[in-house]
Amino acid sequence: MVFLFRSGTFREKIRLIFKATRQHARNLATFATIYKTMMLLQRRLNPTNSGKEGRYDTFVAGLVGGYAVFGRGIQSSVNQQIVIYVFARVVLALAKLSVAYIPSRADSGLPSGIQARLRNSAWPVFASLSWAYVMYLFRWHPDMIQPSMRSSMKYM
Image 1 (cartoon, helix red, strand yellow):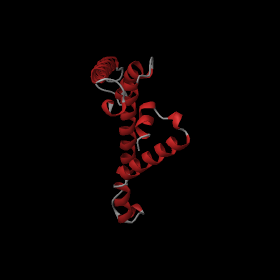
Image 2: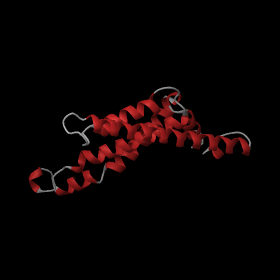
Image 3: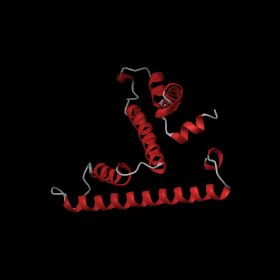
């Protein structure tokens, strides 16, 4: 993307790519370190079941790590892309989860054809709504879209 949508010399573009790659790797490594440390601390400090992982330990560790690495300080484009990527994966997983436990038997009250369509609709709904929202925002509120994405969309 840097080569397509950024101006500058070849050397400047390569330097930007290396800088972004280094920041990306450093941030993910820092997050992993904080996450693993929090998991270890929670397991050791668990008052009811010492040495065992609690039901919400992963959530708390992710919350602390996410805030420490991505939630405070400068919102760099690298951090924004990582968080947006994670958010998109979470939304898609939640859409799949929302239909994962629909009973497949007749006593569910839903015809089997509708059950199958609900189970298979998570990705198409997610994809089409994502594009619908971004095109609407680009048309009516372009200043709200991340600058690099806005720049890319001008070529569409």
